Length: 80
Image (cartoon, rainbow, N blue to C red; front, side):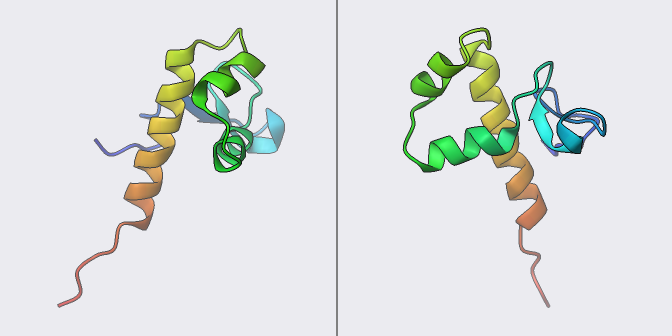
C-alpha cells in the first residue's frame, strides 16, 4: 500500500499542532520522539508505558506507517 498524507490513518501532520511535525493522530505525540526512543533501545511496551492513554495497537500501527512511508519515499528507482 502506498501511504500519502491523505491515506495515513495513524500519522497526521497538521500545521497548528506541534508546528506541523507529524504526530500520532489524535495526540500531540511527535512521531520523531517515538522513533528516537526506538533508536535508543526502548521497546514498544516501554514507550506504551510512557503514554498509557495511547492504545498499543495505535502506537505499533503508527510505527508501521512510518516504515512504509520511508520505504516508499526512499525506494530507489532502476536506472536503465
